[in-house]
Image (tube, rainbow, N blue to C red):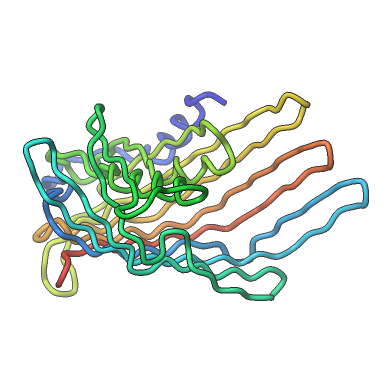
Length: 276
């Protein structure tokens, strides 16, 4: 799967002409700021179908995951250290209507982040060695820390820019070893929030997927997309909210049979100053 079809599709969604108008500085928050991050992701009304020698079985799946994280940073001469206290990591799953609530792998844990040689943040657990699914979750946490949603320059209304949604990239790695993920944002308007502060409304579009083949002729594939808005408080840039909806289609094949899933997706992330 090449990158070009994704880029062409995204570009096609933003063919509205850029017009002269108000410009504003759109920069990512100062990494030294302490933040509270609340995130909710899930699927409602998804279907999973398994087929094999005995026939085909389909199930309905609802999954909601909520996280609450307190993020702080201690600067130093080597680039600093980020501490993420995961106050809540909860997963509610319902299969054919039967619901179960469990703690996520990072629930109640503390993760610390340091910069690697490339200047990106990587995370480990503060008091123990990570193993199993915790390793994947720490990679997703790093993907969010390295997000760089905003271009760090003056942007005019109607202007677009590319970004790499690493948090989606790491999520897709559960199904595909090397997924391709691309994203684009467009400044829709500059307006007022309910409290009177200035805010930027930004349209977002993300597309990703990939395919892998196994030595026995089997393999796996995934493809999906998300779109929605990012609201950035221009008077307090550390305050923002992203709301996305979309879908994910996955499939895998082994000697015993095939499994496919069609999952409507929702994602909401709220970031605000810690203690506010």
